[in-house]
Picture 1 (tube, rainbow, N blue to C red):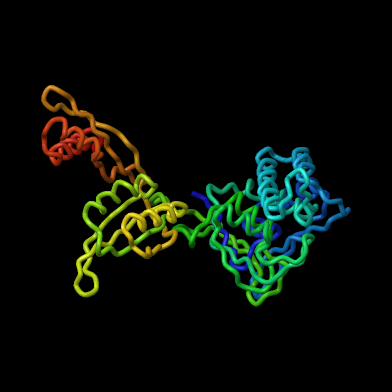
Picture 2: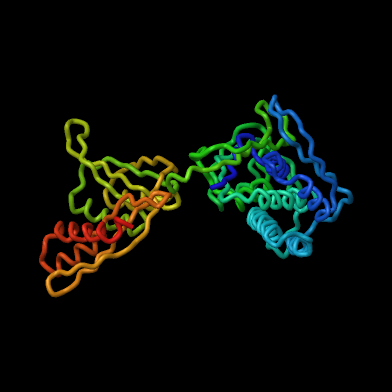
Length: 396
């Protein structure tokens, strides 16, 4: 699986993203020619050194200053460009993200919204060129670590604004990208944020895999750290699937078994991936329980609130966005005779990427219902269902 991994430790702008993708090996000649033709600009790409790091710098020279464009004028212009269909759609999506952010940040409806810096020909060239580069490299996935947005104040067409700018902050908020501030100038531009928001998903760190090549796109800032955007083309390990979850934990010392049992039903219904309780010895020798919940990051806050409401705990620890490897899974079913009737039980099968069967487990709820209906012990139904599953699927 091929992935592009962005490491914006010194921010990101449209020209930095384009330059880093060109440095990864995207077709420079084709991309420059297409961007120049589409945006009516002159594009040069030169190697530079930033604090000892060799990088590529993209410089876009605007041939004729154009008036400010409205959002709909810009969409019409993109629609008329001689571009591959996917590139045209991606470029339109990037500018739609920008338009939504500008509209919300400055309280202007789209009908009256005019782009200032981001609607100029150089920004259009950066977006078109980046979309072409992504198409040329054709990654299966694009990942991005937490972004350094910089700090201080910036001067714009809207006046003096804090970093990150309102439009940039709107994009980060809408798409859930983790970020931090380090520096005294703007390091993440709205165009850079919109490109990352459209193509990438957040990642806490480098995934498991091998580096194929690395690219560095130079920015305009001169800071203590090298003002470059690092990108890495990776072959991700196919050993397991991968996702990210939050871990919520709290110690409970005054909660009944009935409340814990209710949590086992309530929390999965609210989106928890897993709920577990372990016995615990607390201070002064008091017996207690450790409640641990796995959840998708966007569901953590609601689950934490529910735990507080149900248990009365005053604090919940969160281990944010930890990486989790998962086996490939599929759901099947088996049937076997039980007296005069036939039992049908769901089976969860786990596989390695090369197709080897790792495990077969019977669905608890199906087995419980059969046990209640027949009067047989639950453990007997579980045993017979899994034996039948291994006979049916284990040799395939």
